[in-house]
Length: 81
Image (cartoon, rainbow, N blue to C red; front, side, top):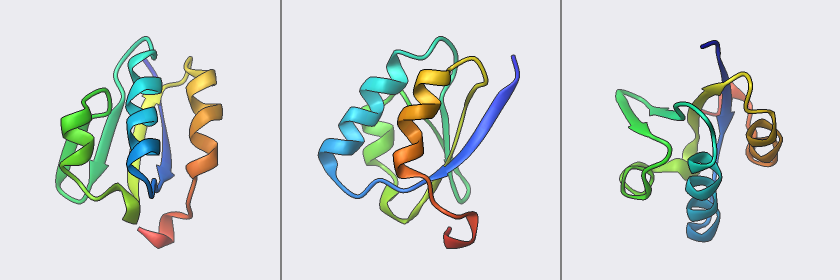
């Protein structure tokens, strides 16, 4: 499966919980990377274990167009990471 990447930052607990809910609807893996840490984007505990407000890399299947559209509201420039 071909994966796409997007650089995002989420600043509120409610939005982080919503992110996990949306990720859980994706058919395939949602992988979040912050520095040397890689976590499952479908895990609320994983998401809360890293600081997503400063930016993370999210990898998701290229077929997850609805999820990609949802993520676009959190998109940041890679330079900001």
